Length: 199
Length: 271
Image 1 (cartoon, rainbow over the protein chains, first blue to last red):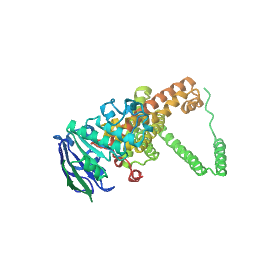
Image 2 (cartoon, each protein chain N blue to C red):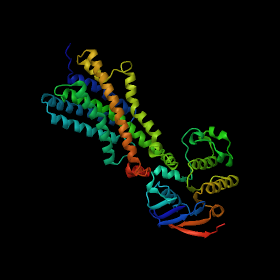
Image 3 (tube, rainbow over the protein chains, first blue to last red):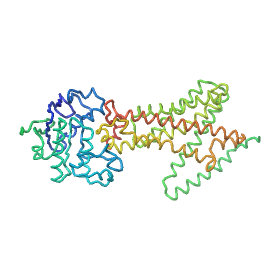
Image 4 (cartoon, one colour):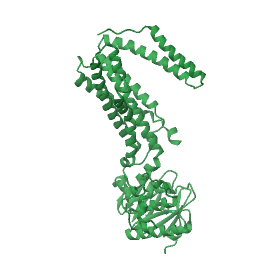
C-alpha cells in the first residue's frame, strides 16, 4: 500500500495518490510534462515537499539508499558501469529466463548490448532489490512486441507475488490500458484521472 | 667546505638571454606562447626578488608573528591557485574553504610536526627552516590537491548519469562515487610517487641540488631530501584524501542526492 500526500515539486500542482498492493497505475503525458520528475521525487532523488509512505514507512524515516531499494526507479535509459553484465547482478535467477536470457548473459560485454537488451536487463537488475514500489519510466520503449509482452507479464507477476505496487509511465495509452488498473494524464503540471477500467 | 660562488646580475642576464631567444623563436613559429613565457619570466624574477628581500628581513629579526603572517599569506595564495586550476569552476566560498582546509591538513600540520619533532631548531619556528619547509610542502601538496580535485569533479560530472543510476539501485552516495574517488586519489598521488621513484637516478631533486651547490656535504643534502620527500608524500596523501572527502560530501545532500549546484558555479552546471 502506497500513500503519496501533497507531494510538491516546482511547477507542479500538489500530488496526492494512493496505490494498493498488487496495483499498477499508468501515467501518460506529452514529453516534458514532468512525468520523470514526478518519479524522481518519489524515489527521493530530487528535492520535494510532502510525504511518501510505503507499507507504513515514511521516506524520511529511512536512510535514502534503503528507501531507494524499496522504491525503485527504472530510468528510461539504463547505465552499466562494469565490463560484464554479470558484475551488476548478485546472481542469475528465474526472471532471466522469463525475459529470454540464458545463464550465458552474465558473461556478456555490457558495452556491446543493444538498447533493447539493456532495457530488459535493467528491469531484472531492478527487481533483484525486491522493491515494494516500482517506478517504471518507459520500460518498454526500445522493445519489440514480443519482448514488450514478456516484460508486461514479468512485472504483473512480480507485483502479484510480492504484493508490490507500480507506477508505469508510458506514451502508449494502449499499453497503459493493458497493464494499469487506473490511468492518469499529466496536463499543465496537474495529475488528472483518465478513466477507470478496473478489470 | 668551499664557499658559494655568488652570481652577478650579468650572470643572470646571460641566462635571461636564453629565455629571450626562446621567446623570439616561439614568436617566429607562431606558437602563441611568447606572451605567456615573457609574463611568467618577469613574474618569477619579480616574485623571487621580493621574496629574497622579505626573507632577508625575516631571517635577521626572528619574529613569530611575522612568520605566522607570512605562512598565512602563503596558505591563502596556494588555496587560490588550486581554485584557478579547476576546469569546472567551484563556488568561490566553498571551493576556497575546501582547498584551504585540505592545504592546512597537508602542509601546515605536517610542517609543524616536522619542525617540532624532527628538526627541533631553536626556537622551533626559526625562519631558515620553517619558511622553506612550508614552501616546499605547500608547492607540492598544492599540485596533488589541485589534480585530485579536478579529476573528481570532472569525472563525477561526466559520469553523473552513472552515479544517479547507482543511487537508484540503492547504493549509498559513498558507494556510488567510490570508483571515481579511487581514480582521483591516484591522479593526485602519481606525481609524488613518480618523483620518489625517479629521485637520484633520473632526476636530482632541486632542494638537494641547492644544498650541494651551497657547500653542504652530499650526505647531509641527501638526508634532508629524503625527509622532504617523505613529508611531501604524507602531506599530499592526507591533503588529497581530505579534499576528496570534503568534495564528495558537498556533492551529495543529506538524502544522498547528487547536487552539483551545491558545489559548482551556475555557468559550470548548465553546460
